[in-house]
Image (cartoon, rainbow, N blue to C red; front, side, top):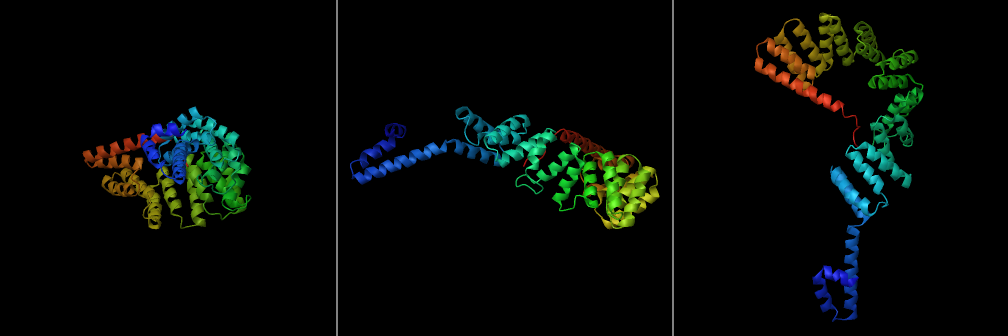
Length: 365
């Protein structure tokens, strides 16, 4: 063993020859030095060292490099402890969900207490839209935020909704916010979640139940108004937004969306009034400025529209509709170069938006 080590490092052979002429104590020191050095060389290529290096690469945002390292380890030592979990994590970070699931399942078979692998497997199932498979894993973590994956409790609520387990969804959300599952606010929160998941028909009964429990519950009528706008029923939306303002007259969002409903009905004078009230309450309301710009365009006043639309984009530069409307205003004013620029920006933002919608994978923890 000593001979092989020395052949690899000739300078140690010469060192050993000189030291061997000294006392036996010196010989012991040489042996200890060689043993320690050999131990270090072995540790640097051990499975655990490789796993640590892979973790470091993952933390640096280099999942491809980590996978290369882990694949090489798998060829040498496929049963190395922790290997399956780390490979699953690397595949997940590489957005390769299917192989991530295979490795994460294997990791949990080896160690059912591997919390990180359980989290990542739940997120992988969720990314594939497999809520029934994700739920048993998500339920193990309970209603409190999880270190490294704080969205876990919220994802559980979403999965209950997607599997049409309404009572469990409401209870899950209530626990997250320390509410009674039977409270008006719990029903309203479930209604909001259903709207977010574009299940608006299912949301209405939940919000109506919330209002029966508490007729003065803030933002309940607002949510119904939003639902009616989504359903292209602006007249019903006007009624709900007005009810919201009767309960809470300081909600600028209600003035803004009421203005939107009036615009859709062609009631531009009323729309202008409430949109200006929205701005008085929140002078950074890009939506209110945008709608005022649209009204000005409909009234054939492109100069006024330009001012409102430029203001809107100052607060919300990624607003596709505002860029398109501003292009129209510039064109009406004969500002062709600026109109072309705004049209180009709108086209680019729309393309980017379509591309991002194709990526359904949830944020990586």
